[in-house]
Image 1 (cartoon, helix red, strand yellow):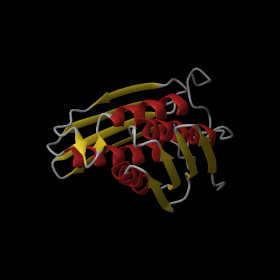
Image 2: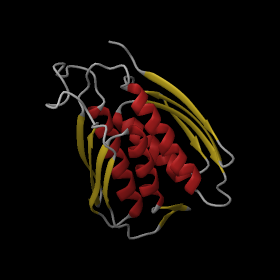
Image 3: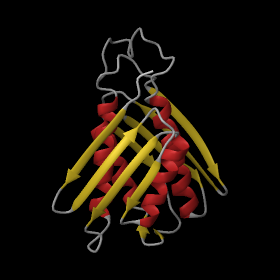
Length: 197
């Protein structure tokens, strides 16, 4: 089977991001950002998704972590889109529901070519360490726009924001892995329309 490894770099006045995505390999997960809990979430996403992710993200977090989190979503989205650019077929749909102690999270992905985000989450604590849980929406929005996917990301329950966010990223990793899988898929077409988008 052909393995898909995409390496991208984005450099602006606000952030410098270097990323390698290996969708068909289980590792490594080597993730360093200037926001420790965000690194933790991305590691959980790739580890439980079963794909390799090497990422270094630096940015103006002395101002706010917003630019770094959003730009990371943009680069990961670009990598996912590139991963299927030459693929004749892939699973298209992926779904996962993940519990983590008090938290239960769900992610459903459609690689549709139509960027759509439905995100429902109410975090009882606005901060996990220094990480603002409000930034999760910014990451997901950027990811969806660049990857051109439909994503439903729902936190069904939870009392601890750490558990809730981590369960969501684990579910997201599994849903992405399943949706972009090229093994054993229907090669007669991805849509009854004959095209995506």
